[in-house]
Image (cartoon, rainbow over all chains, first blue to last red; front, side):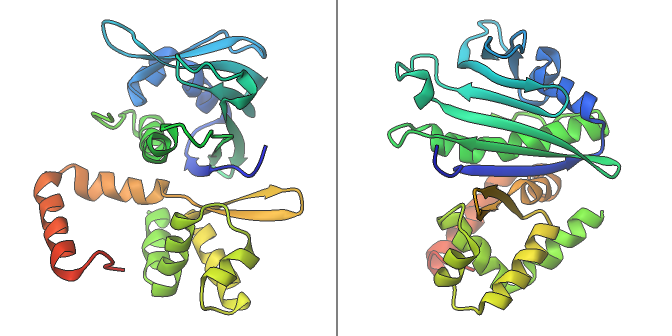
Length: 147
Length: 108
């Protein structure tokens, strides 16, 4: 893999355990992401990212590559119809490090394929999701109407 | 509010805004690469990068022996949410478009 395409950092006044849980719990992701993250989160398992609506339509799929609670989570990240082999799917790493009274969350997104339109969507998406996550954990309120 | 103070102070410098623009155009540059994109001494770029990292506007990762620099827009998004999105953004977008049209694209 070459160099990452995107690296995002946010400091959130919470504990690593609470932040870890907020990344994985479908009820919490539905609040701040307006999508549900669904998996048993074991290394090797599949994970799904579903719209939080009646249809629960599938938005993203992937596999859990690495899971070290509450420090590091690595996922592959692809559109449901993507027929490319898994090693060509993009990859997201969440690193959680305590920093004083806060947790430093680093999101690294890499291994994009040039022909994918995921790149532009990602560029706009992560800052919203991370701001909303921070807002939910620090104030109890996620940001409204993300998408 | 320390966080926001750091962001506004970091953005108050035209040189640092240019540096962020360089990263927006080419994310993941090394210090050496950044220097070739900007007409600044290595020492000046290093100092500006420190301020930007402190304000969390630049994120860095190590890949082998290289340190790569990324534009981190998350704190700016927080400012946007707090000061702009709450209000109606449509009239603001219309004003921005008008300004761009009249002044040219780059309003630095």
